[in-house]
Image 1: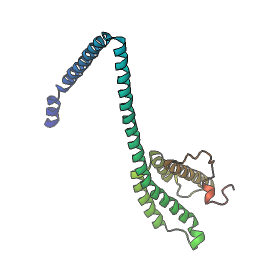
Image 2: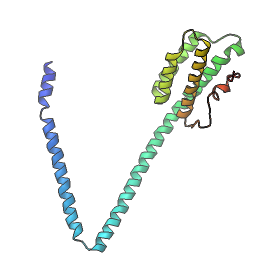
Image 3: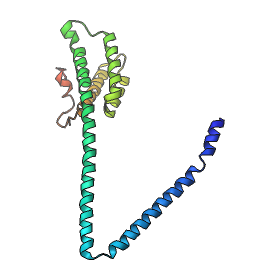
Image 4: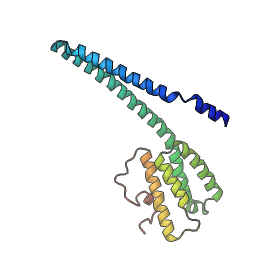
Length: 194
């Protein structure tokens, strides 16, 4: 308690000091600009035009390099993230194909323990590498799965799952423009139209 009171008392001067510093910077900038304007106005037109052209050239060059570096860095970060996301999402799709097809391929459904282990692992990876949209949709999907689903619940759950698949594709750079409802689910559910 006494430490917080001392901390507040020792920082009372920071606001006035900041205001004085900002005022000083603004005044200094105003003096520099007004002096530069006086000097610039007294120059011959040809010299002033040459200075303007040279300044614009330098300014455009510097801005193009800075903007180019910014976008290059941003693209590099996106590429590194994509390299982490691709295996995670491929594993996710593989798991769901195994889940949907395990009964047909092995004669028995996937064990609940394996599902829980996978959901735990995937959720951990998704928290680190997934986009905000995918994390949001996955969270809503997991909360919305009913314990004993009815037929309408199952259809709603499948359509929500398709939204998750579309968000994953978008996160990997696909635009999903020509996909309509049911297209992604139709890749592994044969009677999706029914």
